[in-house]
Amino acid sequence: MILEDEELLLNAIKKKLEVSGFNPLGFLGAQAAVSYLQNEANELPDAVWLDYHLKDMDGLAFTKILKDTPRLSSIPIVVVSNSANDETVKNILALGVNKYILKAEHRLDDIIGVIENILETE
Amino acid sequence: MLDKKNLPKIIYSTFTVLILSQILMSIYAIISLIPVLAVVHILTLSFTVLLYYFFLQFYENLDQNTKLTEKQNKELTETKDKLTKLLIELEEEKQTTEKQKNELLKLELAIENASDPIVITDPEAKIIYVNKAVELITGYARNELIGAKPSLWGRQMSKEFYENLWYTIKTKKNNFHGLISNKKRDGTVYIADVNISPVINNEGEVLYFVGIERDVTQMKETDRMKTEFISLASHQLRTPLSTIKWYLEMLMDGDAGKMNKEQHEFITYINKANERMIELVNSLLNVSKIESGKLAIDPAPTDIVGVIDEIVTEMERRIKEKKLNFTLNISKEVPNSIDLDQKLVRQVIANILTNSVKYTPDFGSVNLDLYTDKDQLVFKVTDNGYGIPAKDQQKIYTKFHRGENIAKLDNDGTGLGLYLVRSIVEASGGKIWFESEENKGTTFWVSLPLAGVTAKKGIVSLDS
Image (cartoon, rainbow over all chains, first blue to last red; front, top):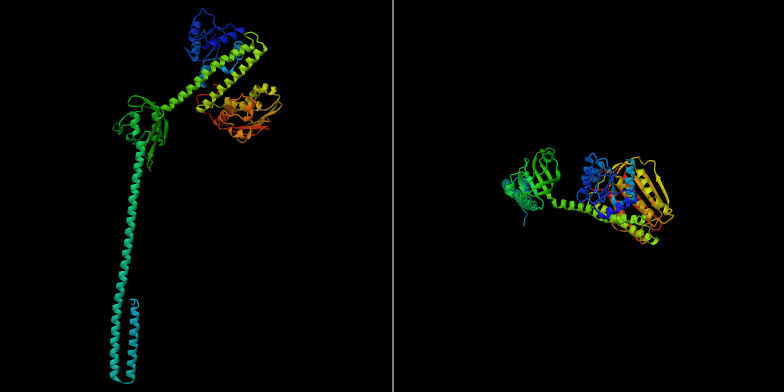
């Protein structure tokens, strides 16, 4: 599952994940993603790629919802953001986020590598 | 004219001659047995002696009178001098008092018209003086303020805050300095930078409290806006850059089909330029963070040798490409763990090492030495590269400055690297210096205290 409010970026991530053999599910907003996850009929994602700054909810609030829901709490979360101060990173990692990655600094390949690693160790 | 003082002498001589001659004449008359002459001379002698006696008396009186007058005159002159002196002193005292009065008036006017609010209270915090600025900032009139307590426009902070404030100024009799939220008469809350000092007498008792505050609401707001701008810029500028980066990556990886050689070449150029833009945005953001004074320094026990190894590993590809002779020497004295901000140290060393690798021609040599010198940990990066021209050496730490020789060689640099490096090193309590000669090479030294870097609370860290 990918949460990214920038459509061009969302498409790039989806495309790259597809090429890498994943079956990505993209969301431009957090509310829609939460609704999807809370519907028990839907299949749960292997991992969540989360942009910290979403228009309708910040990454911290979204992570809290997942971690507070037993059915969803074990889904690995990788936060991929453009900016963050130390406090934000500390807080969200404390909630149990697996990794915090700075967007412009990394290649898509690198980030997908991080996700693959997490999935292998899970 | 005969001198008064000579007069007795002349008279004395005259009388002596007269008396002696009369005595001689008398003796002569007695010896010559002329009784009548003897009687006449003895009578004349007696008369002369008597006259002499009167003269003596008269002159003694005269002398005493003269002496007395002289003494009186002297005393009078002295009294006059004393009086004149007293008058001068009085005049001077008058002038001093006038001057002091003027000084006091000046001081009073200065306090009254100071732009910062000034409050004087008695030891029980009852206000005894406020200047004009207090009325202006609080909105209360002077007659409402005098006799009241500063809590009239305070009471916005916690109970513990005020308890600590009073403990500091009244019990410990120390100065208090801090930021306090206060409330104006119209309900507006403002932030004041407050200084309160107790005025203490010789017995150590508090006579007054003097409080000076400054409205820093605007300053705080500007600070907040600056921080907000940094965050906004980092987010807004990086989003399009990430988009370009990731689509280029897919194109280059052939995710959208295979490109021909020329297409691949062009895309590589675009990617290179984009990477430069990302680096520039990062550097600009770092500069902005450092200049906002909010850069956090967060030291933690660091395996510095491990950090150096990681930096070297990251640069290995560049070093091999340029076929540089690279050596790394780590002294045995370097401790296993030092309290450093790993992120900042990494930034500093990686930056200096990157410069050396970048600005040393193929087949050149680059050395990195890590050793201790007294209480300092020293990083030394030496190369035999292009060097820094003498005329550029003064300006290498200036923002956006690039050495003339290297600017011609490549247009890849931002001119921000060494500015950032020096800012970080100095903020961490370290030092940076260099020696360089054009076409011979450059050596950079960075020293950091072995005892560890002091923590500094801030709200931003580099590259976030």
